[in-house]
Image (cartoon, rainbow, N blue to C red; front, side):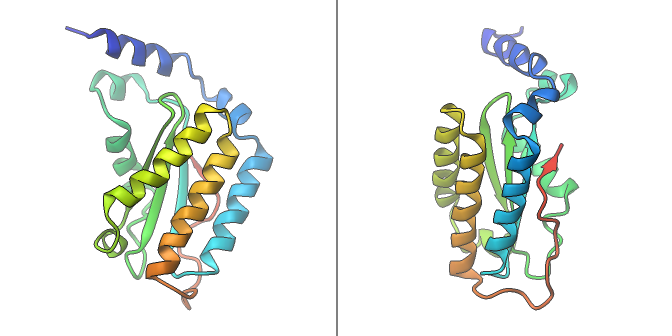
Length: 169
């Protein structure tokens, strides 16, 4: 039996078409996020990847996939785990749920507890509730960059291993 909260979630996702993404994050916002990631990565050897998804498809909704489960899939699909020092971090935003998940590779996850990532997510989600999507993501990139700088100081000699441009999934 489908619960009321499931129906509400279905409606939110089905009523959140991909074109709404460009209203929330226009090209200038995506450029600002790209620049913030590049700036941050000049201060540490970690890799930051931002992924934004407007809504889940019917199959994922029907199977009650959480934002966290989807973020783990996207982490793998974007190969955030594929860095020399295993210090890639994904910031995943699911717009229909206004949910943020941060997934860290094993090199940084063993040094930083989930509570610290959750604080960053909560700050971003607070900005999203006020309609400040660009500002929320930029603050998240800055905060994740500070964590990476603390544990992996100095830029990596190998250079940029992952694209800085946000992925629209």
